[in-house]
Structures are given as structure tokens and as C-alpha cells.
Image (cartoon, one colour):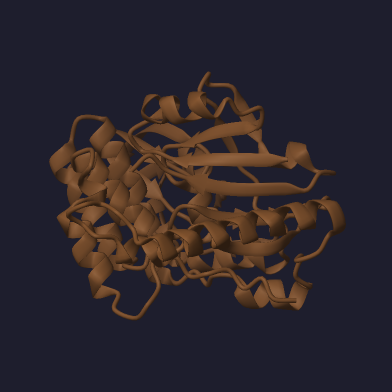
Length: 203
Length: 127
């Protein structure tokens, strides 16, 4: 079963066109408060968790098919060199093939000790960040954008690794801002660090 | 003052005084812990907390549990968040944390209803 969760603090209507285009028969859920990201320690989209028939996590949150090739995009033409495009497609295919393999044969499911090792650790700062994020979204929805924004900014300050928090906040400020100049500045500031850490599909 | 209290699973409107001092019943609804003479209690555990005019300082209690408390400047809206230890403990057994969320039509779906199937749980966003 697939469960697709839209991290969408603007609300369901903002996600509607994509969900309708996908003509999905699986659950497409709206997570206005990023509750799933909080529960599972997710920090970006797309990220996925694999859960077995007994309800156990067999692969903790990891990048679900995206790669860092977008960082090599020519920003004036918005185009990617063919070899990067090809590498990007290959990585996506490899990931989706792994998902199918797991469904059919159980391959790629991690043993418990390896799954535990890869679980994200929640720090007090991250827990505090989620509380600020929730309050910020609530205040914005209830007409108090100025104060809401202060809480959203504090959430990002406390949990700087969460692209979800930063980009959602930018989007609430203005649609499109999540992929604007400030976003690229933040991406460049990563330096050698990945934006989409590649999943380890060895073994 | 009527305060809105956002807890993990609910949004409550409760009569608060001097911050988040709540009457015993409201304190229990907001926290899941029961005010008793020996403190705030749940199962066999009691955390000593002073009671004043029948009220408990729920914000102070929540902080004592090492869980985040944030509010707006007017003290009208409060979030009683989950603590780091609570989240880490929930994941430590590798049981997928359960949640209930609406689809586009507003119909609620609960992850654990899919028990018995493999689940590919993925996130995405429009932004």
C-alpha cells in the first residue's frame, strides 16, 4: 500500500491539483501541521519510510528518488546537462525498483539493528522547533501572520536541518518563495553536504 | 481568559488564569494526567505540583516533564508539544508511529488500519 502525505500548511486546496492529476487510488493525505514529519523525524520532501506487515519500520526516513543533480542546473535556462539528467533518472529508477523488489521479495528491508542505527535522533531543540512550528501555522491560519511568522522563524532557527520547516515557511509567506533566491543561497551554503542524501541501497 | 490549547491529538478551549493555570478537570483534559493532592498523577507516577484555588500551572508541569511549551504573546494560544525523549522512545521499538489525517474530501485515514500490508509511506509538497 502507498500512503502519500502532502506536507501542506496552506491546506488541502493547495495540494488538490497534483493529487487529482495523479489519479491515485492510494491514500493521499493532507498534513497541514507536518505531524508525520515530526513523528518520523523527516526533514525534507520527498522522504519515505518502509513499514512491514507487522507495522515495523524496516527502512527509516530517507530520500525517495530525488538527487542533488538539480544543484548543477543552469539557473538562467533552468536546464540540466543530459548526463546529469540521465544520472538523475537512473537514481530514481533504482530507488523505485528497490521499492518493488521489497514488496515482491522483501529485499532491502533492513535488520532491526541497522534500521535503529539509521533512525533520526530527536533533540530537545528539534522538539521545541516542532512546537513553534505548530503554533506558527495555527496563528497564521487564524489571522495573526506577524506573530505566526516569528514562531515559524524560531522553528527554523532551532531545527536548521529541516528544509520542510524553512521551505513551508517561505511558501506561507509567498507562493514560489520556497524555490526562490533565498532557497538557492541556502542550498549553496550546504557546500559539500547533500540536499538529498542518497539512500544506501547496498546489500 | 479562554485559552486555546493545542495538544498532540486535540485543540481545546479552556478557561485559563495567569498564564496556563487550569482547573483540575481542564488540566486533565489538556495533559492526560490527573491532579491529586500528591501532584499530577498518571498510572503509578505522581509529579508534585502546587494547587492554588483549585488550579494547576499546566505550563510549568509540562516543562517539568521536559516537554516544549510555547504560547502567543497574549497567552491565548498554547502548544503542549511532545518531548524529545517521548519521540525517541516511540521510535526505539521500530513500531511505526500511528497517525490519522484527512484526504482531500476530509475523510480521515489511520495508518494502523493498513496493518497486514507493506506500507510505502512517502511525503511530498507543492512548494
